View 1 (cartoon, rainbow, N blue to C red):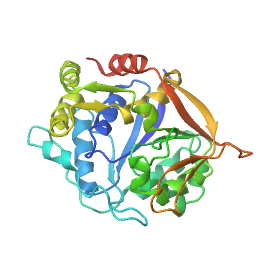
View 2: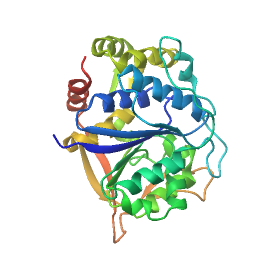
View 3: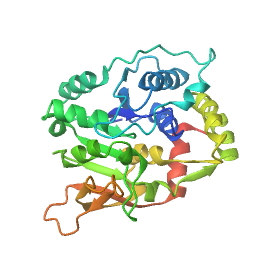
Length: 294
């Protein structure tokens, strides 16, 4: 079976769907998960969570690195990692400091396998913009970049982009060979109520046992899980889950009121980005739970 080398950049510890996506990658037989980098407030706690999920899934071999805590030019919008409250002695994990080791790890890993690696970014794009700025050849050395981010059917700003719009602008402007963005207008169609998540996660076991514990922190305020990030992850391995179209995407940076909006440029002579335009939620959930169990 051919495998796909994956680097995961995540703000795991805020919304629960990052952990749900990581559980999928750990069970996906075609995924060669080469490492995980964390981004946004308390990135060291996010790294502990990522490591704990990996270990709960029987994987102690996956490198986990702490990334950037603050956005480039805007104040932090998610300074804490609330799901770290789910960590306990039941869920072993390594300890991490705030030292940023993610950028050099990304640089070395991508350079070690030029043209082979898919970078899956499911949080604010600070780490990605930093590595692109520090080593401008890196975008061209990727096989592809898969993003969960953007809002393409309404004049609104999606959270991952809004948390660091200037980094998002740098990433969309970079010469990545294949960049696909799965926006909230599409991922928002894939949702399950809390009780069904509890039942199916427990049935699946493994990493989803810890994810289920993390989800209880989430369910305190939200009665469902929207599978934003898992859809982006699954699309790497099953391109039929979403319809996509070629577009040029730009990020609004000039207007404070519109900051972070993902703007399509239909008259652009070149359209280097693929954006998801539709999804079959039933097909997605069948695929997701076929991979993870439950």
